[in-house]
Amino acid sequence: MKNCKHAMSRLLLSFFFLLPLMMGCASIQPIKSSGGLHAGVKGEKPNPDVQEADFDARMDILERKIQELQGRLEAIEHNRDVAAYRQSAASPLGMEGSSPSAQTASSPEVPGGGEFDQVKLLLDEQRFEEAVSQLQKMFQQEKNPLYLFHLAEAHFQMTEYAQAILEFEELKTKFPKFEKLPEAYLKQCEAFLKLGKPADAVLFYQQLIDDFPQSEEAKVAKNKLAALQH
Image (cartoon, rainbow, N blue to C red):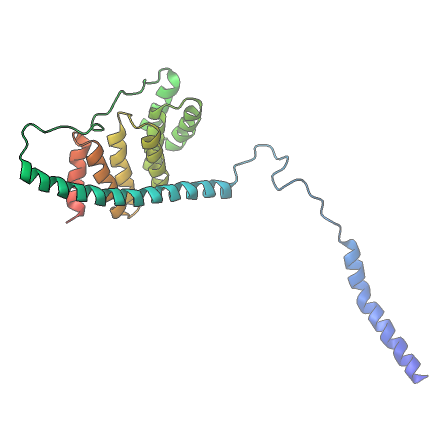
């Protein structure tokens, strides 16, 4: 009899202990999916993770180009040594020439209308964020290198140096005959220095000198190189 009462007591205690848990579980309702965190939200902003991934991918491409430039620089130095040796043995006359890339080709058509004038006014007033927003829209509509140049310049002024470097690089890649390329090189080098990467700046200064040896910017680059290497 005592054993039976003892068993009943244990059963009742177990029941009262499990009852709250059972009630709590019963109150939990399954969460219905709404098709994603941003589904159906008006004015949805770009995913920052996607933007960061795109930025990182572009930076990886630039890093590979820097490595390529390092190899090119070493090859150029080797070729110069070979050329100097051959020249010392030959003594040619009237062999001076200019690099085919030393001359910047035709300049793009300067955009007319009030839209670009408004952007220039924003830049003059140092309203860079507004200028960036406007320039991005304009460049999507018309692939004019002037838009991309000023976009990179605006990011530089906003101290967003990595972004400016990428945009100057895009300018050089997509518009190799743009008349402001030497200026873009200098700004790109300055951005590298701002980021504490003098070795990368040296590579791009040298590329500027090699590609546009007769430009005023090349003279500036030579002075900058001399200062960095001492």
